[in-house]
Image (cartoon, rainbow, N blue to C red; front, side, top):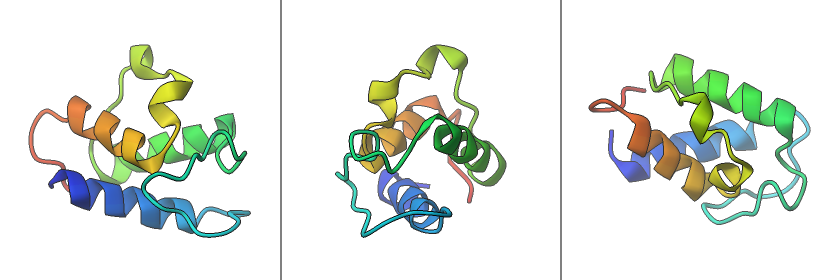
Length: 86
């Protein structure tokens, strides 16, 4: 799966999260706006591991890596061992 497909998957997932407010774009500041909190990050990471089959090491769990959907997609791409499968 290419970077754009990973990003689209993440955007779709975020838009469907309970309590999500408003539109989400690739550059939405999801942490600064409070759209994504620590519980939301855990939920998102579970989705990434289960659906995209990519495991993110704990050393990568830094808030700046989760600031926007684009930065999250970058993180997923960087940690994939090969093609990402959705």
